[in-house]
Length: 382
Image 1: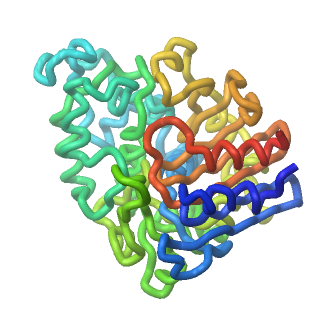
Image 2 (image 1 turned 60 degrees about the vertical axis):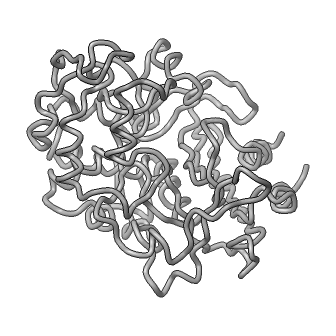
């Protein structure tokens, strides 16, 4: 079987990624392999503690924080979110998904906490990006590839969101991304604290996630990787340098994709989920909450309507859940998600396996890049 170094290095050698860090944990055995460089110029070698923009790998962490508030008794799954997010107390819905943005009807019921957790609140991206109601999500709310310094502060962001109709009635359909951003605002409103502070106290500090935050401080920028996309011509074009958009705290800390992290920090969080909420002798989440996060909450028709987003997968809270094996690594119950910046983290409870892959090239769409597929194939032993 090819080793982890060779599995990743072939993609560095081909030029598809400047570097990557792969981590595979099976019980007490942890294999970590950094390969390549932090940028295309080869400024310094990739290291185990290199810091990456993890994008949507943020989502499960924010969902876990919402579950903590539920366990604290501060909120309940069936609570309408309008009591904390009055901007969403009486939303309108486009009459049909393809209807003009001003052809609306009232929502038939309130948006609930569980709607946000399961990404069925009515806001977000379907498989068809041409629908009229999606345009303001991209242009005004900056949904899409993370760009933290361009997004307005939470109150302004929510005021703008309140003027945009839902694409579907609450609870009707799974839609991607925006529900996790709303979860982040909900946490801040319920606790009266900024989202970064709550996550640091309840998740990152107890788990020893010392490099996970919404910005990289100056004394860590030497470990921060550059971020690229595949350009229209041959080669990679720079999207963000270490001293760019993540070098200072954003006005809007995105619960959908704003965090930076390392392979070991991601292992700490996902290891807690794999251990049914326990880490370092502390119960951070109850086993029941972890099961809710890692259980599919979508109907077969909702999964089918998601298109390429969830091929062979369902959705738990904050991440996907494998339902129908379509590849050797798609083991039923496998939970986690990918980040559009080239990152991925998953647990497979049935085998006790945890995988983290961090790279720095933007995904071109919902299809997984070759480096991810080869990494998962290696981790699955096929």
